[in-house]
Image (cartoon, rainbow, N blue to C red; front, side, top):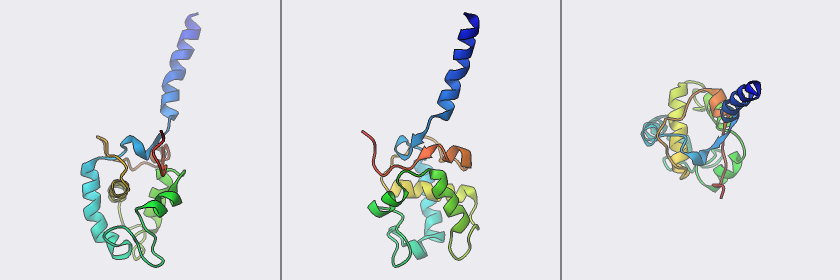
Length: 137
């Protein structure tokens, strides 16, 4: 009987560790999004515009088209694309902390709620956060 209890106790924390969250669970802080807004203005707005709408071949970073494009993927997918390819004139020049703040600003611009912690920078943690275009009911 004791052995069963110990096994069950070991399984419960592991189940929570594997649980996914979504962008609707408050995965960034308002303060981080504010820092991201300033970084976005310096590094991204010249191509994606101040209102994140993009133009021509430059994609929008807010709105229905953006949300549909990333729907079902993880924040790690989006974060690593930003990290490796942006800004277009100096790919990879922004730190992981800067990109995390910019991504927080993008989530805020897409009306996804803020929480009480900054969005992390680690791939393994970001891979557990699902980008869903609409809040599940």
